Length: 309
Ligand code: DON
View (spheres, helix red, strand yellow):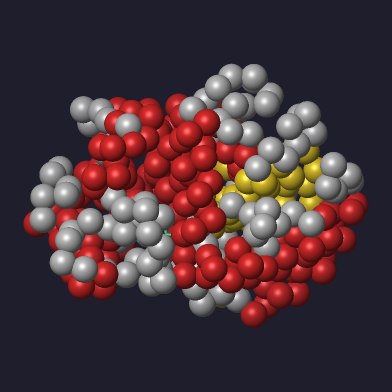
């Protein structure tokens, strides 16, 4: 086991916590601006069911961009690889997560990967169902299965706050609709995407989800295969190449594990075959990643030789 006790983990949290002072809580989604910038919590889930945790672990966070990995896994299962990758690419962008620049510049209206907003909106568009409610139910059922927790659900205040302010995401959708990549109306899609991003849980649930990806799609607690090994492999690969946006290269060098961040300050880590990690530290760096969370992962990776490279 890499970290045996809550006390051992707590020492690392307190070493990383001061770095949060250099960051800023996201407020472009107004409801996220209420988070406490000094918070930092982590949970590590092991395949044998044990979980060590430290920091403000009762705090709930919304998944935000971490949900992009989960929706990708769902549509890969529902639609198959060929269908999905005809509509969204596999390459990192080097651009900020909400950039519209490459969509037009490359001359093909195909978002470069599913971890940037343009690509994630196309992925959410592919979730099957007759209505926003039905599609959200499919996604929610999948998230609850991954977290092995029936209480996980949407934070309606955060979802509404994003829906009311998602002008740039609407612009991405209108561009993609103009080019036939998105075929539904934009507002229902933004509603579904906002609710997807506003799924709320604590860092132990997040670590549990990270563990399922780490274990190739089998939930160690329930013993159930939640997704095919290939889907978990594709998702982990995107986490390495694009999971930390335009900081993914530096993150791979310094930390070296598949991970996905969100503007709420969450980071989900999946160390293949070993552990799932859930982190919450809402103060962000300039690229939108949790500043305390990255420091904490750096300390963990160094101390326990976590890098897969
Ligand atoms: O699309 C958005 O703006 C958010 N719901 C999610 C963005 C996000 O988490 C980017 N992360 N670093």
